[in-house]
Image 1 (tube, rainbow, N blue to C red):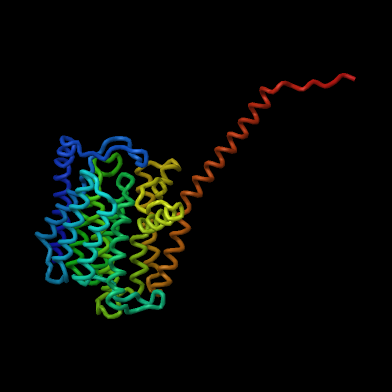
Image 2 (image 1 turned 90 degrees about the vertical axis):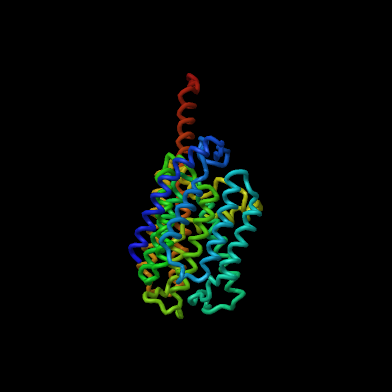
Length: 374
């Protein structure tokens, strides 16, 4: 099985590497660009069909080397992925309204949670709740899938950022699946990592191609499925080889950057009474750009922050899930405010310097006051 996993990683990586140059050429010939706008950071026309390479390379690798006998509801996962991929691809080419994309996500989440039974059945004592009924379990799982899927879509605003975070998350989930001897899920997770890594070769600043919605929706959806399976496989009744009692807290740490960023912007949009789907420049990466960081620096900073949170969660993994979630959530609130604090502090310093300069100029050009002679 390990040989199949290695082959899946290599295959997904190589297919993405060799497919993307052709996709870039076709996108240029057909004028399929992500054009610069006021709310966007990039200033050049960039093809946005990277998701096509990610989806195809991942799908081929998994179909060639994966074993679906141990994965319940595999056909529904595949059907959901196809639905999300084509809804995202349509948006990349001719623009799809946010509500229509949401409908596609609801259908995909319903197939996986309601029919394939890939859902959260136990809250591990969070809020004092353990086992939950079927309806609550299905609705909670659908909500998680939609939130995680959209969080990857929303964080995709800087060259290499969404890809780097997705790569880190795929590797992390793959590692935990390995600890549980869950090799089928490990193969799927690492195959996604290989496809995303191949894409990153062309997406890291300066980007030659963007992930687009076809990529961010399918990658986000897969990560949401990994999250649910990870939490469930570490449940009290799972009978797993390696069990983490704080699995929900660790899952939060793995997804912390996109989840915190999504929650923050949605709350701010609600306060301003604007649509939660209305794009703005209030994401974490926007604030880091305002502080003078380049695209590479923003991607590196947020990726390292995500890795740091994963390491912190592992250091406190033996604590109850609610405590790990509390620690991770509190730290996220503190760290998430730092870019805004530094930006405002820098602006205050600039304004202070300008005021001092104005006072000096006024004193230099002001006519001297003559004393009256006695």
